[in-house]
Image (tube, rainbow, N blue to C red; front, top):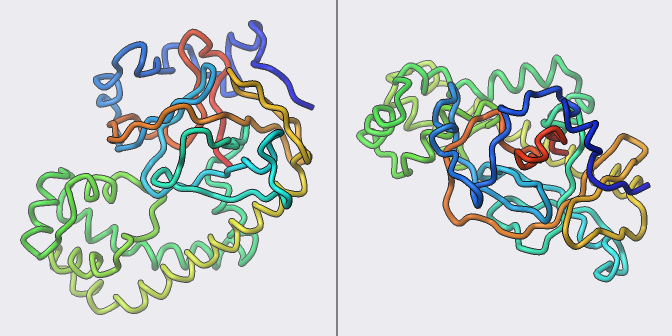
Length: 281
């Protein structure tokens, strides 16, 4: 059944029991760039504003479950859950977030499919390039400069995300892994490139399968026709737990540096901070 925002009583702690001062105000009401930069693991993400007191910081390439076809008035003949990355997200889209649980649900579904041990072995092999990248340095500007000397054509933002995004399996263009090995002088990685690429492709394939599985679960659990208020988020209690559905109102064109613990989650304005934050499906 649908519910409105959490009550005042629930706002004192929230589902994650995070103190109020740990929540950031929306950018439209105040600046928080300085606060975000103080994080030990800063990252770049796009600010997305939703109807009501909710917002999110979404990293490049991260995919969001879209439930437009389940919304009353725009429901398609065959309702389906599909995914859009931040680059494809549109104003007016209805996005689904899980209320609790690990944000990397795709990884857990993939582990369940092939076994946690096999998944861990594949992931270790696929992310071997991280060791080489870390040996180049920790400062994004320094690492970027050395990679450019090796022939890299990416922007510094890309290199910064490589250094900070621990969920990334491998760079989108695997040629960049060869350049990382070259810049690091890592002969072992250079000799294992084909194995690393094969492991990376296997992991990505398992994640695609897991995404289809998640879609099936959501399609089975979601009501056939959802009435979402125009001015705020809505909560649904489904078979596998509670979820939030929010409507996209605005998407920043440029990225913002923010704390890594903030990204890819549903967040509330500070004046309703106790509503907490939700893990992304």
